[in-house]
Amino acid sequence: MTDPTSPPTAGTGTCVSDGTAPDPVVTVDDVRAEALALLAGVADGDGLDAPTSALITLAVNASVCSLGGPRITREIRHALDAGATAAQVHETLVVVSGLGVHTLMEGSGRLAEVLRERGDTSLDVPLDADRATLRGTRQGDDPYWRDFEREVPGFLDALLRLSPESYEAFFDYCAVPWRTGALRGRVKELISMASDATPAHRYLPGLRLHLANAVRLGCGRTAVLHALDIAAAAPPHHGVPAAPYDRP
Image: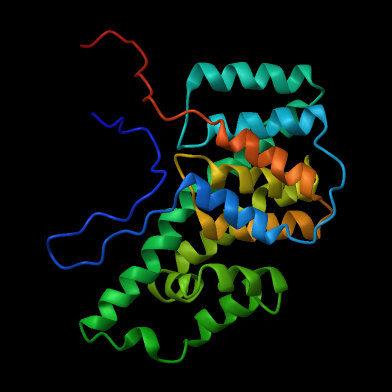
């Protein structure tokens, strides 16, 4: 019997009976190959220091794709013992909690696509004044969001058109760890990259975006590959038991 927690290492998606295209399969080997291609020509640079290594290990264990309570406790202790501060530990948890936005990234654009298939033209009209102002304020000409659009095309436009409230909330939440600033930017990018690269997630758009940002902020090949090695060792999600209490 196949272990349902094991990531695929080869193959193609399962056909869907209603005619929907099968899900493509991204393998663990694909993740590594993508990273190596993006690292072509990048200098080796320094490795990870002990606190950063410990925080990345905490991140991949605290990710919603692993989420092991006792493991999280253990890795918090390891990070503090390695010299990380409490603020850095908590900021790591805030960064990795953003993994949930991948549901929006993969779902919003597809909802817009299906609505267009069904003849809804409201998603293609010019933005109203309020939405146009929101886009200018939140995205503007920031090159980060141009790179983001390249990796997740159409997501921000769909989110803005379908739910301006969610659009604003997305930007607000993503900005929290950048405002608190307990961790250097490149460490946050390595944490995000590693969380996207775990065997239970394998989210290539995020991997590509965060790896490029980490390199841009000064990370070399050695640090990136070390972070990916930590990600590759992340355990599967075995479930989280409920807290005991006396039922009425």
